[in-house]
Image (cartoon, rainbow, N blue to C red):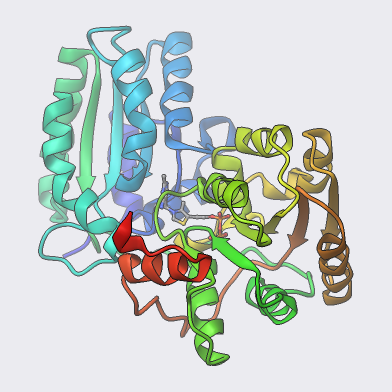
Length: 379
Ligand SMILES: Cc1ncc(C[n+]2csc(CCOP(=O)(O)OP(=O)(O)O)c2C)c(N)n1
């Protein structure tokens, strides 16, 4: 049994929950797509991170007296906990809001390694935050009662309440596809970067499909995975992982970022500029969407990462939209001391048969550290 996103949305509207902010999630993909297509931009903001969504809905409450809706994947709970506990909490400013959380890694449901622990502790985490929560019942007859109870609790406590959403709770809803005339796809661009890389080059790649593509490119080339640190979780932190690496190895370090991930913790770009490492090379695959979780828009197309990088102290930056531009930018960054950044404007979308890493995160870590020359067992 699954819920129609439209009917669920109408249940929210009928309870005066009509202002939305969040970061998209693959489990909430249908609902996110429905909200994106149906709610005017004045009432729906896809924020750069989950804490920002809590802030935005708090401002909405201050201006209207009403409660808003925040949505996120449970990976984003950590980003939201600070403003939930120190801003919206009934012990602080007491801001009512409905928080809808996609429950990746639910015990008993097979999921990727980065979701398993988060999924296992999710209910305990919510209980320890002391926020009333329910697990969404996909039976349409039950939803009205669940929302009535949660909304009543939200008003009684004047604080956040949570609806936890299991996989496949919503019926499919086809979002209008973002079309693009750009010549390069993300995987083609990555293929060029890997082909042109030198034997010493290390990669740290961001959360989502780009790391899956990097894994498959290495498989197809018959290479090992020891040069690549795949940041399967921890969205937005790959650039800091790469900076830490660059600070302690002489080898060139390429951070393969996404626009959504770079924007999630954009201040890190300033830290890279202020802590210049000549071997640091940042590549932002800017497709203007959260491709890995359903293609919901980011503000990526309005951001000039290349210009921003120069402003923030990178020594060189390049914008590439074609294979030739990417090749010449790669040749330039290999010649000059960094930190440097290449913004690659790519089409949204990925292969439908894209697989997932078949090695575990700990195997990935061991192989990567071995290629840096460190035995992970002795640390
Ligand atoms: C803190 C956090 N919030 C949300 C997610 C869910 N998530 C995984 S990948 C992704 C989109 C990444 O977008 P971008 O960096 O632009 O890369 P793309 O998928 O477009 O290649 C999201 C939202 C997550 N893993 N962690």
